Length: 535
Image 1 (cartoon, rainbow, N blue to C red):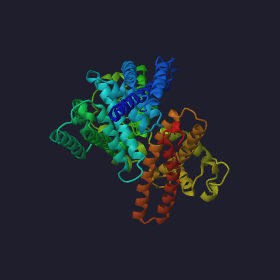
Image 2: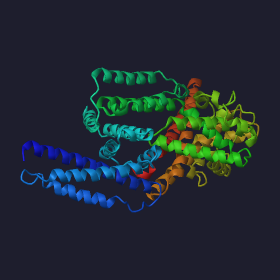
Image 3: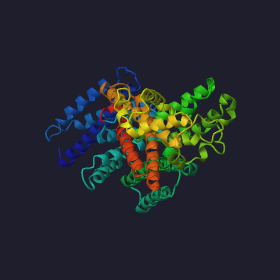
Image 4: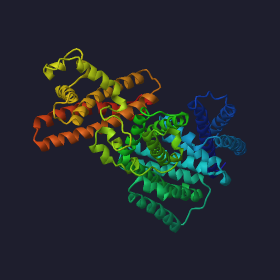
């Protein structure tokens, strides 16, 4: 056998091995996918076939020598047909895997590497003929490629190394695609179109503007229209850059409006405790809570989706006026309509930053909640704190009160004892102090208690490997409230400095640091995937 013939057999063996590995990785993925959904997968009808093919390929590899390779051509033909048949069977199974299921798998289990992502992508390249490329399959491959790019950047060991590895993998994809090399002019035109999309993103100023432009839908259609050229190494690199630009744009715009969005659903959680709800409204509130939990998990896992954010905001805008007026289901006409003028739609982040915590956004509602009631998340620690302070002697020095057995567990500062006493004087008609600010300081103390307690509960759940979804959701709500209170401390400290009350400014600085310590600890826990145990 000539050197050329032996080289051809080696190439065929490498091709068959790559097809086999890609099919095997996809087979393992499908088995794991069932377990993610809480099911025990039935015995796979493909396991034995994979084992047999592995044995045949291993045997062939030992025969790839000049003296023994003559009969391998026919064996490779047979093995190739078996692998193609197996890939076709797996592709039929893939029709049952929707894009959200693929995304959910990688959100739940993140201990994957670039090899898994690359092999799954190759499975589609090997298994799909031209007519097999449905919109769902294109979306799934698009997701895998984006994940692959993120993973390569995460493990980048030096300047340019991630880009070099990325180029190598993308070029290997293009080699699988049986399609003519496009002209340089065609490549440049497509790359310019993708660059223009990225430039347009830089000018988007709000989530509403991004949604109304329908740029995501247009971009998706553009990618689908690329056909096989999607996998050209240069185009794929440009698509990846655009995908990441979209994700960063959504993140930027979300952070810009995060306070308002958080205030919207915090407001709903507070209001639903104060108005009677019927069956229909209760069902809608349950659905809304589920949406919030799902959205915050995706935000935490760096998988934020604009369509879910838009749906969440629209549902919040429709629920707030119904809860504020107490109309319940009787105001059904407002559920799918736009938010009325003057509600959360017109509020800004400044309303929260300079108002009294997250309650500022309900002060102008027709039926506002009791201005003296703390937010629902801290009502219980606030009640216990006030009760403990009420059992102390009003004439005792504040520094002594914080050390009494009743008060010491709350870890108070003397200034917070003073705040309680001023509120007590105000209730009796005396004082002359700014009671809103004093009440805020006492609420801040209660929030620290809640933050500290949530940290302990969350850590205990991690240690016991418990189901942490509900715990993480509660922790993120508390952290969001903590962020609003930290801003309020900044505002009060600035006012104290402007007024020349330096002792007050120093006391507020201490309280802010105390809040920041508990807030930061909980924030770190709440914004990691708690199920991984890598906090």
